[in-house]
Image (cartoon, rainbow over all chains, first blue to last red; front, side, top):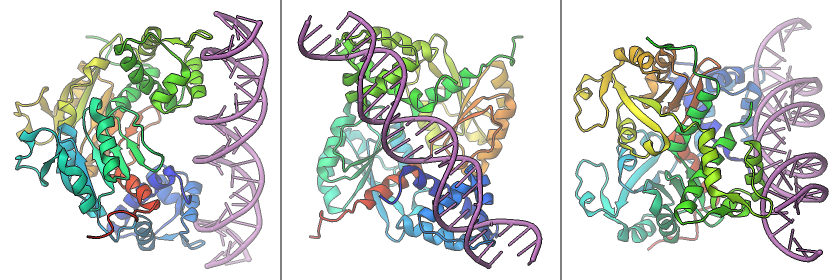
Length: 214
Length: 214
DNA sequence: TAGATTGTTAATCGATTAACAATC
DNA sequence: TAGATTGTTAATCGATTAACAATC
């Protein structure tokens, strides 16, 4: 295992900052520099780069262009990654509309839902199919990754269906811990829990001393 | 500091499972039991509970009702938490439509956007106001928490505005690392990065051996 | 009682941070 | 050269896991 999960997230943050710097005309960056921009310590930045075999110039910092090329290689940005969305509710819809994936070589190619009234929706950038058509579609289009925005109560069943069809990675928006075989990758995004966690921490430090009544 | 971030997230997962168990008519649960359901080791479950002062019965496990009451107390579910949404785009819209917050004593009370055409939207459950009205609203309604679903390029400015108005916690959907004073809590949700991270890990284990041509 | 489960202390593990040699 | 920065090794820190005593 070359790298764990956190490094990868940080690498994506670096990329984001580096792109901005490039647009601003900068050519090189120091670890200190990039660290400040991404909320990471300079040592961590250097360690991350070193771990991915990225070399800088002693005294001269890192070349932004080279960094971006290398990071793109790490993420295999040479080939388009096709993704499907399962569950065209509020969040599913929002994700389908989102335009930002393309620039990172990710394309949402289709969506699926049980509700037939959604199959005719014309405002969407991709077609909505019946769940029956999912297995065949996944195989024929060699889809590896699915975004799952379905109600909690059917999340496990849909996940089983996806895995059965050959999906290797699932982004799950339901607040359920999916039971999946060890070779399947899951990313859980639970907006509700994140919000509650945030509120908890905000309350912890006391909310007095402000807005003290009319 | 009584607890770090991870415990809190796990506590929310426990709550979720416990609710389901309660609905199914169960009255007690063992650490082993709850751990399996939430993807956590039994030792971790016991340790978490112990850390929050939750007591079980040796041999008898934990009483589900008591657990749920205690967890609710930890999250101060006695008082409604008011939240605002800033940026009524795709994701902001989806979050406004989401019905699941209420049952956890969270209510989205208003939303804000710079685009005047959105102020008249009637399909939304809460009004959309101009950003000018935000500071006064936050103070008058004693809002502590904001969900920020604005374009990346204005994320920092909007965050500054929110903090200036008195917001203590921000849920940020832009792929930017916000620069904020130390007493402000930030939760970053970057769907794009999560997706790229997922694809990276799926690719790592090789996607051969399937769909090998027509 | 014997067996099972909690609750806590100790050990382990991994990630971050500190230190510093290498070098431009 | 002197100063600054990288790259790597060692130290620290925190979280998870293992072990086990307490006890129902």
